[in-house]
Image 1 (tube, rainbow, N blue to C red):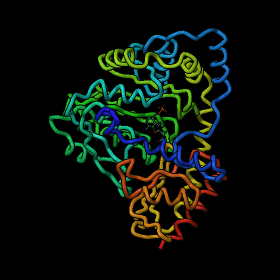
Image 2 (cartoon, rainbow, N blue to C red):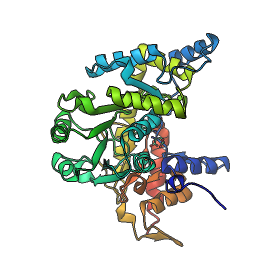
Image 3 (tube, protein in one colour):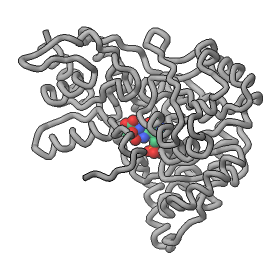
Image 4 (cartoon, helix red, strand yellow):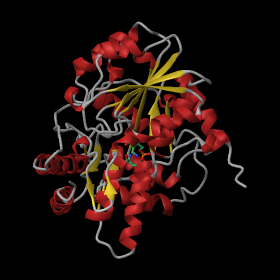
Length: 397
Ligand code: PMP
Ligand code: GLU
C-alpha cells in the first residue's frame, strides 16, 4: 500500500520533463524522434567555463561551500546586477541554489503561508503552481491569450488582488510563450503593486539573455516596488549550463535570510564545482551569450515561418526565450484511425507517436488550447520537425 504523503500525492509530474523522458525512451527503441519538448539550449557549455570547473577540481574545491554560495560568486552576481541591470545588491542578498528551480521554490516556501494567494499570470511555467501547492498556498491564475500577446495588463492584475494576496510570480521573457514585457508594461504593473505594499514580487528572469528585441527590463528597476522584488536567475539558459544546476536569487535581506535557513536544512550550498564554473561564466567574456542568442533568433524566425504555414495553427512572434506556443484548438474533435484528439495533450501525444516529434500540451502551462515547441535545436531539426508536424496534422479529419 502506498504511504505517500498527501502533499506529494497531490503534486503533478513535471510535464516538460515527462515528455522529454518519453521522447528519450522512443529514441532508445531506435525511433528517430525530434525532441522539441524540454527547454534547454543544445549548445555545449563554453570552454572557459569548463576549464574553470576542471581547475576547481584540481584546486580541491571539494568541500561544503557556504550555504548561500562562495563569496566570489555572489560578488560576481552583484557586479552583473549592477552593470547589466543598474541594480545594487549586497552579496548577503544573493542565495545560490541547485538551479533557478530551487531558487523559485525557496522564495515561494519562504513567503507563502497556508491559504495565502499567489497570483500567476498564465500561460505559465509548469512548476510555479506545484510549488505554491507545496507551500499550501492557493494559485490565482490570470489567463491571457495570443490576442494580447500572452501578457496581463494593469486592470487584470488589479482585479486579481485580494486581501489574501501574498505574492505574484512574473516571468519575462516568458516560458512558454516567449513574450517580453516592455518597460512601460512593467511600470503599469508596478504602479498597481505599489498600492499593495504586502505583495512580494517574484520575478523569474532566467531567460534574460535570450531576448531578440533589446535591453532586458526588470520590474526591480521601479523604486515604488523594488524593496519587495525577488529576482530569479541563473546560468542554465544564458550559458548553456542546464546540467550544472546553478541558479540564484537576489532578494530583500529578510527573504534571503529565510532562504539561507531553509536551504541550510534542506540541501546546503549548491555544487562547489558548479559555483566555480558559474563564477567564470559571469566574470569571463560575454561573447558566447551574444553568439547563442543570435543563433536562437535565427531559429525563431525559421520556426515562426514554418509553423505559420501549418493549417489550423495561430502563431505569434516570440520576442525572447526559445519557445513557440501556437494555438491549436482547430484540431480538437478531429481524429485519425481510432485516435481522437480532444486536448492539446492528446495532440502532443499524437505528434510524438505518429510524427515522432516531441512537444508539450498547453494544459501543463494553464493554456489548454495551445501547444509548446522548444526551438533550442539545430535549423535542420526545426525544418524536419515542422515538416513532420505539418504532414502528421494533415492526417486528422
Ligand atoms: N524558470 C523558468 C521559467 C524555466 O523555464 C526554468 C527552466 N527549467 C527554470 C526556472 C529553472 O531553471 P534551472 O535549470 O536553472 O533550474
Ligand atoms: N524549463 C525547461 C522547460 O520548461 C526545463 C524543464 C523543467 O525544468 O521544467 O522545458
